[in-house]
Length: 87
Image (cartoon, rainbow, N blue to C red; front, top):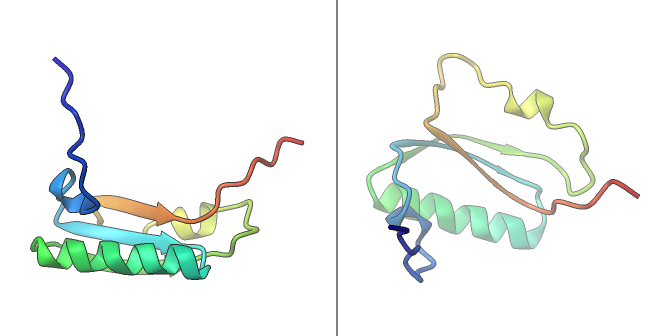
């Protein structure tokens, strides 16, 4: 049986890991969504262990996806533009 995702904007009602890492591309849209997600995580009792930024033209994410061992986030939330680079 498949479970339907609840029709709510509060993403933490589905996914509640205690330690989150947030990454956004510094656009106004992505920053706003990441800010609201951080508020939802903290309201649900979780913590944001690190917040990283990239830009909306980035192609290589290896530097920011390399986690320092002491952070140990349970999940990484990315919000930003994902452009098709296969032209």
